[in-house]
Amino acid sequence: MKLLVAVDGSEESNRALAYAAEIANATDGSITLIHAIEPDIHDMGGGEPISESDRRDRLVVDSLDSAEKHGRAIIDEAVEFAAERGQTVSGELLYGQPAKTIPEYAEESGFETLYVGHRGRSERAIEFMGSVARNVVERTTIPVTVVR
Image 1 (cartoon, one colour):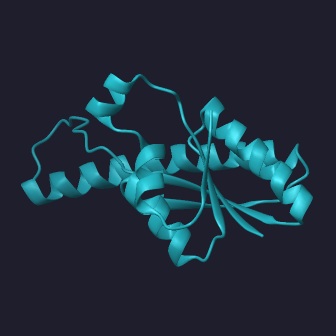
Image 2 (cartoon, rainbow, N blue to C red):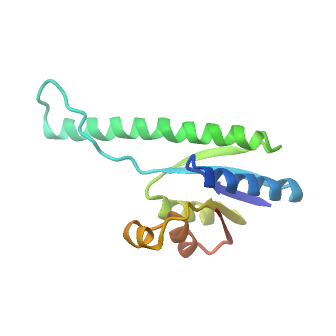
């Protein structure tokens, strides 16, 4: 069985990974971890004026580098967490909105099931900000297990 687990460093995503590890151990399945990054663009300032195009390039590169480092750290921690549960897993960074890129990757890569954590925000917060878990469930055609 080919299992996909979306991780974000939260306790809820660790619980989703722990549950997926139980399933993988019972079914001789394999787990792939993913973390989607959507870097924010921030102006970190600077001492001298630069052209607008150079400024945009610097902002995107600085932000992307930071997001990639943070994303890799999340995946590395999850790999270690899975190893403690008897699973050797691989991990991959995705680029884009998590609610869109996670289900696309899951379907295009032929995963049989997807595991995500859910933080249990209030309905009002979900209406205002949305829920990655909810949007993933709505956008994919493969089975999704949401773990709290």
